[in-house]
Length: 353
Image 1 (cartoon, rainbow, N blue to C red):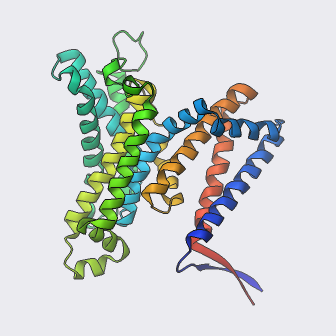
Image 2: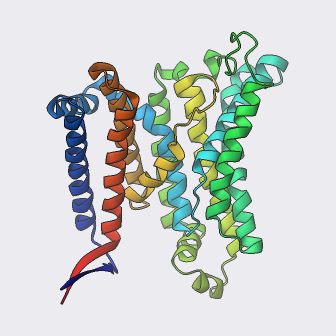
Image 3: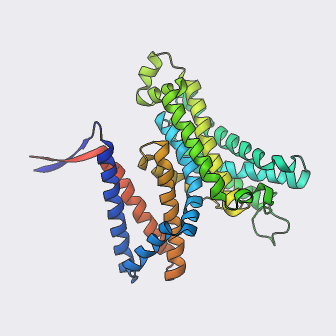
Protein backbone atom coordinates (compact mmCIF):
# COMPACT_ATOMS: atom_id res chain seq x y z
CA UNK A 1 0.00 0.00 0.00
CA UNK A 2 1.40 3.41 -1.03
CA UNK A 3 0.41 7.05 -1.22
CA UNK A 4 0.14 8.84 -4.54
CA UNK A 5 -0.51 12.46 -5.44
CA UNK A 6 -3.32 12.92 -7.92
CA UNK A 7 -4.14 16.25 -9.56
CA UNK A 8 -7.67 17.52 -8.99
CA UNK A 9 -9.51 18.25 -12.22
CA UNK A 10 -11.79 20.70 -10.43
CA UNK A 11 -12.52 21.84 -6.90
CA UNK A 12 -15.67 23.32 -5.44
CA UNK A 13 -15.63 26.68 -3.68
CA UNK A 14 -16.82 25.04 -0.48
CA UNK A 15 -13.95 22.55 -0.46
CA UNK A 16 -11.46 25.28 -1.38
CA UNK A 17 -12.65 27.47 1.51
CA UNK A 18 -12.56 24.48 3.89
CA UNK A 19 -8.96 23.64 2.94
CA UNK A 20 -7.88 27.27 3.39
CA UNK A 21 -9.57 27.50 6.80
CA UNK A 22 -8.03 24.19 7.92
CA UNK A 23 -4.50 25.23 7.02
CA UNK A 24 -4.90 28.69 8.56
CA UNK A 25 -5.95 27.02 11.82
CA UNK A 26 -3.04 24.59 11.45
CA UNK A 27 -0.72 27.55 10.88
CA UNK A 28 -1.89 29.23 14.09
CA UNK A 29 -1.34 25.99 16.03
CA UNK A 30 2.15 25.57 14.55
CA UNK A 31 3.00 29.21 15.34
CA UNK A 32 1.77 28.68 18.90
CA UNK A 33 4.12 25.72 19.29
CA UNK A 34 6.99 27.88 18.05
CA UNK A 35 6.25 30.52 20.69
CA UNK A 36 5.98 27.88 23.41
CA UNK A 37 9.44 26.63 22.41
CA UNK A 38 10.69 30.19 22.77
CA UNK A 39 9.26 30.37 26.28
CA UNK A 40 6.35 32.69 25.44
CA UNK A 41 2.75 31.89 26.30
CA UNK A 42 0.89 30.90 23.13
CA UNK A 43 -2.40 32.06 24.68
CA UNK A 44 -1.00 35.54 25.22
CA UNK A 45 0.40 35.56 21.69
CA UNK A 46 -2.91 34.55 20.11
CA UNK A 47 -4.67 37.19 22.18
CA UNK A 48 -2.38 39.81 20.61
CA UNK A 49 -3.32 38.57 17.12
CA UNK A 50 -7.01 38.66 18.05
CA UNK A 51 -6.50 42.18 19.38
CA UNK A 52 -5.12 43.36 16.03
CA UNK A 53 -8.16 42.18 14.07
CA UNK A 54 -10.78 43.37 16.55
CA UNK A 55 -9.51 46.81 17.57
CA UNK A 56 -10.42 49.62 15.14
CA UNK A 57 -7.05 51.38 15.34
CA UNK A 58 -4.94 48.29 14.68
CA UNK A 59 -7.41 46.95 12.11
CA UNK A 60 -7.12 50.23 10.21
CA UNK A 61 -3.36 49.85 10.33
CA UNK A 62 -3.73 46.27 9.03
CA UNK A 63 -5.76 47.59 6.09
CA UNK A 64 -3.06 50.16 5.36
CA UNK A 65 -0.22 47.62 5.57
CA UNK A 66 -2.18 45.29 3.32
CA UNK A 67 -2.85 47.87 0.58
CA UNK A 68 0.53 47.57 -1.22
CA UNK A 69 0.14 43.79 -1.29
CA UNK A 70 -3.52 44.15 -2.28
CA UNK A 71 -2.83 46.33 -5.32
CA UNK A 72 0.02 44.06 -6.40
CA UNK A 73 -2.15 40.97 -5.88
CA UNK A 74 -4.92 42.47 -8.03
CA UNK A 75 -2.41 42.90 -10.82
CA UNK A 76 -1.12 39.36 -10.33
CA UNK A 77 -4.64 37.96 -10.52
CA UNK A 78 -4.88 39.47 -14.00
CA UNK A 79 -1.39 38.32 -15.04
CA UNK A 80 -1.88 34.76 -13.80
CA UNK A 81 -5.27 34.58 -15.51
CA UNK A 82 -3.35 35.09 -18.77
CA UNK A 83 -0.85 32.38 -17.78
CA UNK A 84 1.79 35.11 -17.52
CA UNK A 85 3.81 34.14 -14.44
CA UNK A 86 4.88 37.53 -13.19
CA UNK A 87 7.30 37.04 -10.28
CA UNK A 88 8.44 40.66 -10.55
CA UNK A 89 5.73 42.47 -8.59
CA UNK A 90 8.28 43.56 -6.01
CA UNK A 91 10.41 45.25 -8.66
CA UNK A 92 7.32 46.91 -10.10
CA UNK A 93 6.48 48.19 -6.60
CA UNK A 94 9.95 49.72 -6.40
CA UNK A 95 9.48 51.36 -9.79
CA UNK A 96 6.20 52.84 -8.58
CA UNK A 97 7.92 54.21 -5.48
CA UNK A 98 10.71 55.67 -7.58
CA UNK A 99 8.31 57.33 -10.04
CA UNK A 100 6.19 58.86 -7.27
CA UNK A 101 9.29 60.21 -5.53
CA UNK A 102 10.56 61.61 -8.82
CA UNK A 103 7.36 63.63 -9.23
CA UNK A 104 7.74 65.07 -5.72
CA UNK A 105 11.36 66.05 -6.41
CA UNK A 106 10.43 67.66 -9.74
CA UNK A 107 7.88 69.76 -7.89
CA UNK A 108 10.03 70.55 -4.84
CA UNK A 109 13.28 71.40 -6.65
CA UNK A 110 12.17 72.73 -10.02
CA UNK A 111 8.50 73.69 -9.61
CA UNK A 112 7.59 71.86 -12.83
CA UNK A 113 4.29 70.53 -11.50
CA UNK A 114 1.62 72.69 -9.84
CA UNK A 115 0.71 71.77 -6.27
CA UNK A 116 -2.86 70.52 -7.02
CA UNK A 117 -1.53 68.18 -9.72
CA UNK A 118 1.27 66.60 -7.69
CA UNK A 119 -0.71 63.65 -6.30
CA UNK A 120 -2.54 62.86 -9.59
CA UNK A 121 0.82 63.00 -11.36
CA UNK A 122 2.29 60.63 -8.76
CA UNK A 123 -0.54 58.14 -9.36
CA UNK A 124 -0.09 58.30 -13.14
CA UNK A 125 3.70 58.06 -12.97
CA UNK A 126 3.61 55.09 -10.58
CA UNK A 127 1.14 53.23 -12.78
CA UNK A 128 3.13 53.88 -15.96
CA UNK A 129 6.50 52.99 -14.39
CA UNK A 130 5.25 49.71 -12.95
CA UNK A 131 3.35 48.85 -16.14
CA UNK A 132 6.28 49.46 -18.48
CA UNK A 133 8.59 47.50 -16.18
CA UNK A 134 6.23 44.51 -16.35
CA UNK A 135 5.72 44.91 -20.10
CA UNK A 136 9.45 44.40 -20.79
CA UNK A 137 9.46 40.63 -20.05
CA UNK A 138 6.01 40.38 -21.66
CA UNK A 139 7.50 41.83 -24.87
CA UNK A 140 10.35 39.29 -24.71
CA UNK A 141 7.84 36.49 -24.31
CA UNK A 142 5.59 37.71 -27.13
CA UNK A 143 8.40 38.35 -29.64
CA UNK A 144 11.14 35.89 -28.71
CA UNK A 145 9.33 33.23 -26.71
CA UNK A 146 11.39 33.94 -23.59
CA UNK A 147 9.97 32.39 -20.43
CA UNK A 148 8.87 35.26 -18.21
CA UNK A 149 9.71 33.76 -14.79
CA UNK A 150 13.45 34.42 -14.79
CA UNK A 151 13.36 37.95 -16.34
CA UNK A 152 10.64 39.17 -13.98
CA UNK A 153 12.49 37.71 -10.98
CA UNK A 154 15.84 39.25 -11.97
CA UNK A 155 14.28 42.64 -12.66
CA UNK A 156 13.27 42.79 -8.98
CA UNK A 157 16.91 43.17 -7.98
CA UNK A 158 17.62 45.64 -10.78
CA UNK A 159 14.83 47.93 -9.53
CA UNK A 160 15.86 47.54 -5.90
CA UNK A 161 19.51 48.39 -6.56
CA UNK A 162 18.62 51.30 -8.83
CA UNK A 163 16.50 52.81 -6.05
CA UNK A 164 19.43 52.30 -3.65
CA UNK A 165 21.69 54.15 -6.09
CA UNK A 166 19.31 57.11 -6.22
CA UNK A 167 18.80 57.27 -2.46
CA UNK A 168 22.51 56.97 -1.65
CA UNK A 169 23.33 59.40 -4.45
CA UNK A 170 21.47 62.20 -6.24
CA UNK A 171 18.15 61.83 -4.42
CA UNK A 172 19.57 61.86 -0.88
CA UNK A 173 17.98 64.51 1.34
CA UNK A 174 20.58 67.27 1.84
CA UNK A 175 18.99 67.94 5.24
CA UNK A 176 18.76 64.29 6.22
CA UNK A 177 21.96 64.22 8.33
CA UNK A 178 23.60 61.87 5.84
CA UNK A 179 20.95 59.16 6.06
CA UNK A 180 19.97 57.51 2.74
CA UNK A 181 16.44 58.92 2.52
CA UNK A 182 14.66 61.29 0.17
CA UNK A 183 13.08 64.55 1.26
CA UNK A 184 9.89 64.28 3.29
CA UNK A 185 6.81 64.40 1.08
CA UNK A 186 4.73 67.56 1.51
CA UNK A 187 1.22 67.19 2.91
CA UNK A 188 -0.48 67.56 -0.47
CA UNK A 189 1.58 64.59 -1.74
CA UNK A 190 0.38 62.35 1.13
CA UNK A 191 -2.68 60.11 0.99
CA UNK A 192 -3.56 60.86 4.60
CA UNK A 193 -3.99 64.57 3.87
CA UNK A 194 -7.53 64.07 2.55
CA UNK A 195 -9.58 62.06 5.02
CA UNK A 196 -7.15 61.83 7.93
CA UNK A 197 -5.86 58.32 7.20
CA UNK A 198 -4.35 56.77 4.09
CA UNK A 199 -6.56 53.67 4.38
CA UNK A 200 -9.69 55.82 3.94
CA UNK A 201 -8.40 56.75 0.49
CA UNK A 202 -6.53 53.60 -0.50
CA UNK A 203 -9.05 50.91 0.41
CA UNK A 204 -12.01 52.42 -1.51
CA UNK A 205 -9.59 52.85 -4.41
CA UNK A 206 -8.65 49.16 -4.18
CA UNK A 207 -12.34 48.19 -4.15
CA UNK A 208 -12.90 50.28 -7.28
CA UNK A 209 -9.93 48.61 -8.99
CA UNK A 210 -11.23 45.14 -8.04
CA UNK A 211 -14.63 46.02 -9.53
CA UNK A 212 -13.04 47.25 -12.77
CA UNK A 213 -10.83 44.15 -13.03
CA UNK A 214 -13.76 41.82 -12.42
CA UNK A 215 -15.80 43.61 -15.06
CA UNK A 216 -12.85 43.55 -17.46
CA UNK A 217 -12.34 39.80 -17.08
CA UNK A 218 -16.00 38.80 -17.11
CA UNK A 219 -17.80 41.35 -19.30
CA UNK A 220 -15.40 42.49 -22.03
CA UNK A 221 -13.94 40.97 -25.16
CA UNK A 222 -10.42 41.74 -23.98
CA UNK A 223 -11.05 39.92 -20.71
CA UNK A 224 -12.44 36.92 -22.58
CA UNK A 225 -9.31 36.84 -24.74
CA UNK A 226 -7.12 36.98 -21.63
CA UNK A 227 -8.95 34.07 -20.03
CA UNK A 228 -8.85 31.97 -23.21
CA UNK A 229 -5.13 32.67 -23.62
CA UNK A 230 -4.53 31.58 -20.04
CA UNK A 231 -6.50 28.35 -20.39
CA UNK A 232 -5.21 27.23 -23.79
CA UNK A 233 -2.83 29.37 -25.79
CA UNK A 234 -3.10 27.15 -28.86
CA UNK A 235 -6.86 27.46 -28.87
CA UNK A 236 -6.48 31.24 -28.50
CA UNK A 237 -4.09 31.34 -31.47
CA UNK A 238 -6.46 29.19 -33.54
CA UNK A 239 -9.36 31.51 -32.65
CA UNK A 240 -7.47 34.47 -34.10
CA UNK A 241 -6.73 36.23 -30.81
CA UNK A 242 -3.80 38.64 -31.13
CA UNK A 243 -1.68 37.12 -28.40
CA UNK A 244 1.08 39.73 -28.33
CA UNK A 245 -1.30 42.67 -28.04
CA UNK A 246 -3.38 40.95 -25.36
CA UNK A 247 -0.30 39.94 -23.38
CA UNK A 248 1.23 43.43 -23.49
CA UNK A 249 -2.04 45.10 -22.49
CA UNK A 250 -2.56 42.75 -19.55
CA UNK A 251 1.04 43.07 -18.38
CA UNK A 252 0.85 46.86 -18.50
CA UNK A 253 -2.21 46.83 -16.26
CA UNK A 254 -0.80 44.17 -13.93
CA UNK A 255 2.52 45.96 -13.45
CA UNK A 256 0.78 49.32 -13.18
CA UNK A 257 -1.29 48.13 -10.25
CA UNK A 258 1.86 46.92 -8.49
CA UNK A 259 3.31 50.38 -9.15
CA UNK A 260 0.28 51.89 -7.39
CA UNK A 261 1.16 49.66 -4.45
CA UNK A 262 4.57 51.37 -4.42
CA UNK A 263 2.82 54.74 -4.35
CA UNK A 264 0.89 53.66 -1.25
CA UNK A 265 4.16 52.79 0.50
CA UNK A 266 5.89 56.13 -0.04
CA UNK A 267 2.83 58.38 0.02
CA UNK A 268 0.65 56.56 2.53
CA UNK A 269 2.91 54.64 4.91
CA UNK A 270 6.45 56.06 5.02
CA UNK A 271 6.10 59.55 3.60
CA UNK A 272 9.45 59.42 1.80
CA UNK A 273 11.63 56.98 -0.16
CA UNK A 274 14.25 54.90 1.63
CA UNK A 275 16.18 51.69 0.89
CA UNK A 276 14.32 48.46 1.53
CA UNK A 277 10.97 50.22 1.63
CA UNK A 278 9.23 47.05 0.43
CA UNK A 279 9.87 44.12 2.81
CA UNK A 280 8.91 41.58 0.14
CA UNK A 281 5.38 42.88 -0.47
CA UNK A 282 5.51 41.69 -4.08
CA UNK A 283 6.36 38.12 -3.10
CA UNK A 284 3.62 38.02 -0.48
CA UNK A 285 1.21 39.28 -3.15
CA UNK A 286 1.83 36.04 -5.06
CA UNK A 287 0.57 34.06 -2.07
CA UNK A 288 -2.44 36.38 -1.77
CA UNK A 289 -3.32 35.96 -5.44
CA UNK A 290 -3.34 32.18 -5.20
CA UNK A 291 -5.08 32.20 -1.81
CA UNK A 292 -7.89 34.22 -3.39
CA UNK A 293 -8.18 31.82 -6.31
CA UNK A 294 -7.26 34.70 -8.71
CA UNK A 295 -10.55 36.36 -7.77
CA UNK A 296 -10.09 40.16 -7.45
CA UNK A 297 -12.85 40.42 -4.84
CA UNK A 298 -11.21 37.85 -2.56
CA UNK A 299 -7.74 39.35 -2.96
CA UNK A 300 -8.69 42.38 -0.85
CA UNK A 301 -9.74 40.56 2.37
CA UNK A 302 -6.74 38.26 1.93
CA UNK A 303 -4.43 41.28 1.73
CA UNK A 304 -5.99 42.73 4.91
CA UNK A 305 -5.36 39.38 6.62
CA UNK A 306 -1.69 39.43 5.65
CA UNK A 307 -1.42 43.09 6.60
CA UNK A 308 -2.83 42.15 9.98
CA UNK A 309 -0.15 39.49 10.36
CA UNK A 310 2.52 42.15 9.79
CA UNK A 311 0.92 44.43 12.37
CA UNK A 312 0.54 41.51 14.77
CA UNK A 313 4.24 40.79 14.38
CA UNK A 314 5.07 44.36 15.37
CA UNK A 315 2.71 44.19 18.37
CA UNK A 316 4.15 40.87 19.53
CA UNK A 317 7.69 42.13 19.16
CA UNK A 318 7.06 45.31 21.13
CA UNK A 319 4.85 43.91 23.91
CA UNK A 320 6.44 40.50 24.49
CA UNK A 321 10.05 41.66 23.95
CA UNK A 322 10.73 39.04 21.33
CA UNK A 323 13.58 39.41 18.82
CA UNK A 324 12.67 40.27 15.24
CA UNK A 325 13.85 36.82 14.10
CA UNK A 326 11.15 35.19 16.25
CA UNK A 327 8.50 37.36 14.65
CA UNK A 328 9.81 36.36 11.21
CA UNK A 329 9.56 32.69 12.20
CA UNK A 330 5.95 33.28 13.22
CA UNK A 331 5.07 34.97 9.93
CA UNK A 332 6.99 32.44 7.82
CA UNK A 333 5.20 29.55 9.54
CA UNK A 334 1.82 30.98 8.65
CA UNK A 335 2.90 31.71 5.07
CA UNK A 336 4.24 28.17 4.66
CA UNK A 337 1.02 26.57 5.89
CA UNK A 338 -1.05 28.70 3.52
CA UNK A 339 1.16 27.62 0.62
CA UNK A 340 0.66 24.00 1.63
CA UNK A 341 -3.07 24.62 1.62
CA UNK A 342 -2.84 25.91 -1.95
CA UNK A 343 -0.92 22.76 -2.90
CA UNK A 344 -3.61 20.47 -1.52
CA UNK A 345 -6.26 22.42 -3.39
CA UNK A 346 -4.60 21.26 -6.58
CA UNK A 347 -3.62 17.73 -5.55
CA UNK A 348 -5.24 15.03 -3.48
CA UNK A 349 -3.50 12.21 -1.65
CA UNK A 350 -4.73 8.82 -2.84
CA UNK A 351 -4.04 5.45 -1.22
CA UNK A 352 -2.97 2.89 -3.80
CA UNK A 353 -2.79 -0.83 -3.05
